[in-house]
Image (cartoon, rainbow, N blue to C red; front, side, top):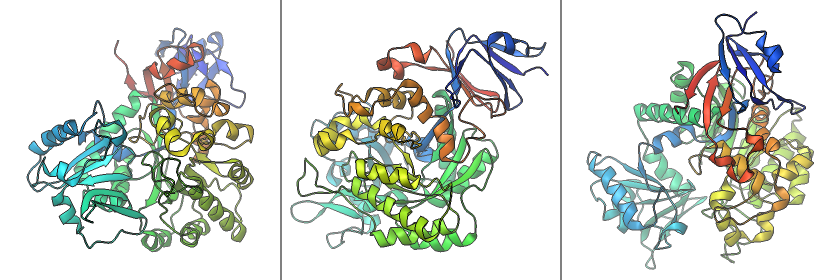
Length: 535
């Protein structure tokens, strides 16, 4: 039996149980046929076999991003980029004005990615800043964390927000000194605005197609989608995957945005649960938001912030509510998870899983905690005991780490996203980028897991640094484990899906500080080349 494709002369990083490094891999159909030395794999070359000379470059399993927002990343490309190269409010206004000029009057103008900490004004924009752009369009400008936004006066009017509007549960409405809403919306208040400014079905599909291409260019072959646009996104994403309009494999997290009762009644009662689907689109865990963002900062912490001694973040639900909603999902056979960044929120999710398993024991549940940002030793022990799968975001340290040190202090930052501790304790953790919150590039996540360095070059929690091979495992095999699919993908072994990435250099031989500068030369899904970099 000859192979359809053979890759020779590579640094083949198998990510198998022994972390073997081979030199060649063969593919037949959509499966890996063989992995080994050049001589043995060359015997599978036939007259019609395509032979790729890796020339010493790294060959890896396709990257698996275990937490990102597929549609949100794509639709951001249809919105005003208020992140890249933005250092002032005037630049934000300029980019939003350009977006407004090509948007019919009355339709939403959307911008994304601003970071108040990087603006010359060192403040959030206000409704009045956005009114200077347009009063004929509702405007929604989302902060880089994805948990805070700013609306202009027209948008606030459509949302029914006035001086008399109380803060919603789990959220805050920003106000000036006189109590007038200033346009700033945090957490659940932001979520309500975000859902109101919904994209059309056609726009969602276009966004998914864009994201699909960008992910392939980064070597991403599978994603765990953490939601964004509710049921409409779920339907469009499923149809796109099944029709192969998108080729990235999707493990779809069913996310409830402040609609816990609806989640229970409308989803759990259908009888479906985690695992339904195929290798292209599969239903993942049930998810709630428990707190805010690490960079906002709005995450729920046990102790007040170093930068704000009277503030400990935003908590969406009580412990009883979390236990009720996710406990019901657990009983129905779902894998359960929650967005939980601060140690107070992480503890709440651990408490929920502990109670759910005590009342309805289940083996191999692989319940997750998305982000699991602050994990001090006592919570680490409980995560290990309960068999929880944390989903850390190493790349956050690069973009947001300097702010972490300022807001939380060195001690707490030392145990944020503690991937080395997970390794030592035998906890399987899977890496995610949380794109578009930060870059989707897995190589940035791998580099930061190895170096724990911020954008300014400061080191944070050096004891949590890991090796390059271990960092690669975070974004390959462990991602497959987190979705119950390690038998299908995540390593280069015979019989597994032929999802393969070729880099432009041998990753094990480059300076760890340069890993993020490497490029993907080729991405293969199901044995088909979906991206090849032109020289």
